[in-house]
Length: 206
Image (cartoon, rainbow, N blue to C red; front, top):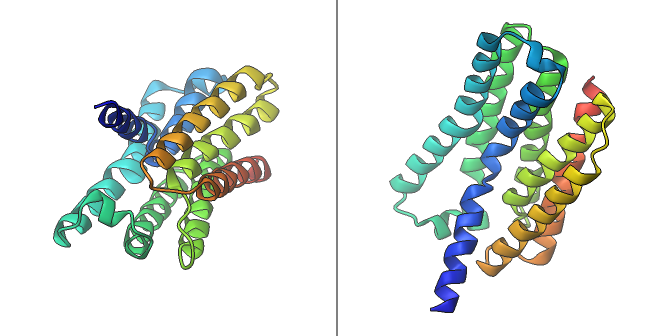
């Protein structure tokens, strides 16, 4: 009974901190905690809806259709050899979102968030040829890297927020290992990929 309870908690944590949410969270932070909150609400809503559609709704819908068509469980889909199509779907959706942002002349530093996510996805796809890293950790690592980069760009002290994000990363990584989805190195490398891509590309693209 205790093990079933812990498994449910681990699954709930995995759903709550899905890697799909990282870009949207980054934009929400920009629009609520930086000078970008001064932008017209209609513009902010358009950006947030576009990000939600192209980085959450479309990839998840496509991946679910792919899983259902193959009659796979979530566990089967998570196998390394079955992850290539989901990666490609996500990469294409990110690329289309960037095209939309280009067409409306979105500021470069906003597009840098998507660029960071796109590069992280490409790295994961390449690594997946031999090794399955944790995309959950790539997601939370990416948001952590973005948060640190925002601290440098907007001149605020990120220590307390960073401490919280590191704690949440540890909880998420523990949940993924408890569910036997990843090893410790899968967790560490995934976080490093997400953090590095976000931190570098958000700062460089400015």
